[in-house]
Image (cartoon, rainbow, N blue to C red):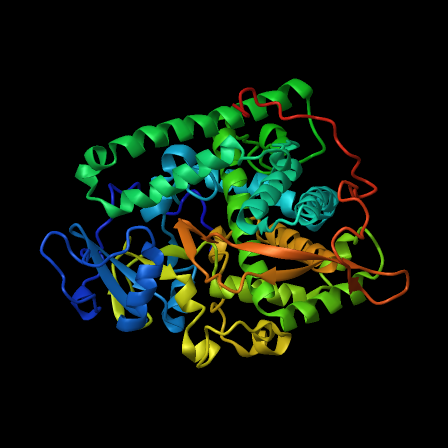
Length: 523
């Protein structure tokens, strides 16, 4: 059942939305020990890593449990049978709450943060969905290759200087430039900067602030987060200013090549004839720039971490790239989908660390979850995706082991539905998931073909949380591979390859001399 403008519920909450009235038998659901009056379950809570803190409680308390924070109770779910029931679109819908609702001041009624009753969700979805069709994706492919060439140029320079590479930082540069180029015809110049673009800094700030709001009592937030609130206002102003200038530049220059921004500005709904308002266009552009690069950069970073830690898996993936792509310098769009093992590496990385690590579902009407837990209309639960992806009854007794063969066609068919949910579920699952998967598979193939990846033996995976997940402090050492004409690929010593400054461009994607039109973006 599509979430149309008639979908009820999901009204703007004030802080946390208590679960007590929505779950008549809440006492049957376990909670952490040592609960305190007023404060709830805050003893020992990790304010900087609340998701991973909830994973720890999930292992102790089971497939459904509850937590209370400053008088507000909410229910968390990860059991496969329970999540499958929550995926029933006839009885449950997306719930916008917790950190997602805290992003409303900057993202408003954009696709990710819109409440179900807001009409702009359906309008924007119907207008923008053709921008992710196969035809549109083929059109983006050349630009993806061009941006990936800027990444490998950057990595070649780092390698030639004997330096390691900053994986999360460089994946963020890559994915920001990709969504900016393909969606909005814009160049942030990320690889020409010594520091992250101000848009990225502001984005990280707003995501972090949205998460921090969940860790303090709502009435005390203005006092306890006074400085952070001021910084967040400045971050939101930066995001708005950047996007407003981007849109203004397009209005001055006229239509582009039918990208997402063209659709936002000029396309009417095919049935109603409605168009997106200028205010909503701003919200949608911010949504796509943030969501369109933040989660994909995390997925690529985790995949590169696991490839570097498992050289036998990297070798198998690299052999597939060599076999499927051969000597062609610019793989075609259709050749990316043929990297089936590389895609399994990506899926297994998303299983262990889905970079959008939770999604919330609310009851459309009074119902009973999985035949056990009564829920009144409007009651909601938060699905802990990393725990769903570790459910032993689905993934076996060793769910922490990295094994891409969990995603062979036979293994996928053998699993129950709704057990792998890195992009959410239902009508409001991520609209850009195929875009993200194509981009990430393409980039992994290009990097595997070009480099041997070496992990620091002393590095231990640390996951940072800012609503999304990212490996913290991950750096890799590179070794350049060389493919003799008609021969077997080899690694070559540093300094014996072609100049690192040689730019590899897709034939259909000439090098652009345009600069970022956003005034003050580099200040």
